[in-house]
Length: 228
Image 1 (cartoon, rainbow, N blue to C red):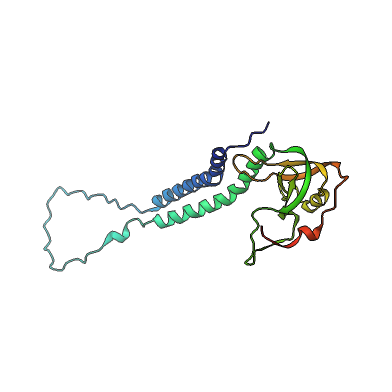
Image 2 (cartoon, rainbow, N blue to C red):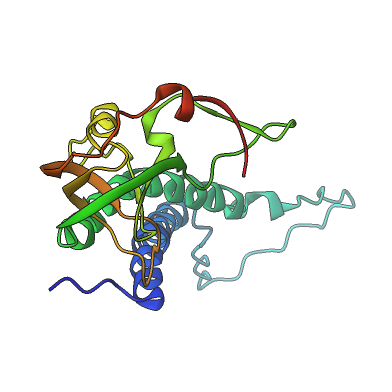
């Protein structure tokens, strides 16, 4: 039986995947960069000359003073800026690489085990939450994945595409699930715990009863609508 992760479990898992792992990678790369730059710094160790056994006459001191040479610029350069840039770039690249890997892991570890079937009766379709209205308080429904199925038990199911599940037939599913009909659907997702949202329909497995079902009216559901 699939057990959805709690808020804390899910938060720690995804934060670890998408933030902690890239930070570790970026830190390692920055440390390697720092060591390489440090090894390239010139070493200014001079061996002291050996004193001769016999005394040599001291040359007369010249009244001309040698110019003072500031050797501070000969010291190792300040590499903090270079290391910081390396860290930032490494973090960005790590996020880009790790993100799809994390998505596949989350899909395989949590979404796939959550797949199940259920018999539902379609009460209707409505715009799904999260669609941004324009300045006039209107939203545009131009695709079936912007609609949410509502059952007679007040349950909501999204009809989103999903690359990993190879689901791209959102319009077909919208047409199959007629208002007033009873169907067995396959879906994934959960409503409790972390990543709480609406489960997503994968397919229509069986038509149970379409006696009183009516075809979905495109004019009713698609086009420009007032936001709720």
